[in-house]
Length: 136
Image (cartoon, rainbow, N blue to C red; front, side):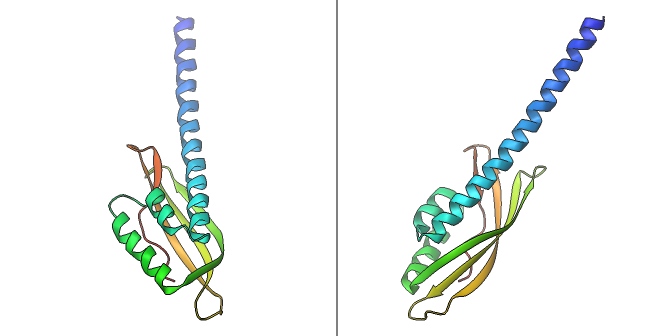
C-alpha cells in the first residue's frame, strides 16, 4: 500500500515539474521572440519581422504598413524593451517597447512607445504578434 502511495506522490511531483518547465519554456520563448522581432524592426528588416512574427490574419495589413514606412524614409536609431509580462492563463504576453526614430528629410530624433500584444499559437509552436507596427 505504501509503495502505491509513494508512486502516486512521485507521479504527481513529476507532472507538477513538467507543467512548471512548460510555463518557463513559454516565457523564455516569448522573451526570445520579442527581442528578435524588435531587433528586426530596428535594423529595417520590417518585411522579415512581419513574415516571421505577425499573426497570419493580420500579415497582409502589416506588410502594407511596412511598405508605407519604407516609402516615408523611416530610420530607427534604437529600441528598448520597457516591460514584458507573460500571462500563463491566456498563453499571451504584453510588451511595451520604445523606439527612437527619424523620418527623412528631418534629422530630429523622436521617440514612440508601443504596446505589443503577443499570443502563443499551439499549432505552429510559436509566439505571434497580434497588433501592428508602432505609429511612427
